[in-house]
Image (cartoon, rainbow, N blue to C red):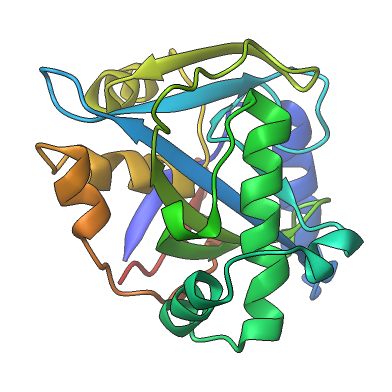
Length: 230
């Protein structure tokens, strides 16, 4: 079991404490996908991150990987059927359920940073569900992919005000020192990436996939989110 500090936000804490006073199931999570786009450096793999603008309803001012929610058209996207079938097997889903999630991963990366990926480029990394107290909830699959040759990511999108290639330990240090804000899935993904010497080794890794849903806990002097990691 792992504990994560709550974000430093008065509005977040107000929402969380209101839910603790009257717990409920919350909204049905929307399917979503996010992608760690990685490339090799002399210091180890780096990953492309973006910082969300402070006006966003979900995860404002937080560092994230490119991604977003599933759209209706993702269910009928034309993808490599063999690649989708392989990803579906890793996800423990049938092809029909996996297709929109894989399509969303490919589409969102192109929309948010201009990189064109294919289903065959993706490997499955994790599955997280937003806790029920949040005003917006996502059932999010985390994928990883190597930076495509001959392509370059675009600058900040309308939803972000900063983007960069970062070494995972560098951003984790900023997080520990309070200079960067991230949700638990992002922290864990960076920690895992930091353990690998090359992109090839990272993409060859096949971590255990379980559904992780952080649990909000009031410790009296502070709120934390407990996560049962595989």
